[in-house]
Length: 174
Image (cartoon, rainbow, N blue to C red; front, side, top):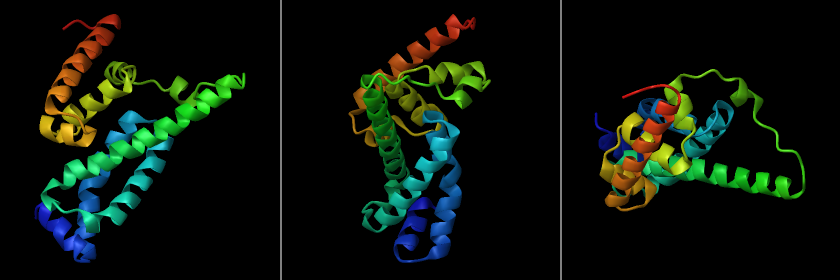
């Protein structure tokens, strides 16, 4: 059964269709969010995403565009979380409070690729995650990020270059 059919059935109140959508998309959504945030925040944000999906699904006019719509919600949720945390950090920094690094992140021993990816700016990391790890097309990435396809292509180019540089700094050669 296609996502489009499941969405239509879920919009009509079919709980099994809703359960199937969640089953299909739970891991990809959590994986996307986890690649943008740490595990604890990813769990919280993922719950917020599914709540937004439940509330917004009846208003989804193009059921065939479910995946880009879902990742748009995920992107907004991640962006909102990062924005609010940056604002809090800025307030605490201006109040001359010591900024403490997340000990879980500091202690995490990750693969070189994940470390290099995490070191990229959010915009570049996001486009790589959406395109390569979530397998969205350039057009779907453009819809999720609310930018033209040309912008997605240029961001992908820049992100690939930055990732290559990060990996080369760590001793990897193409």
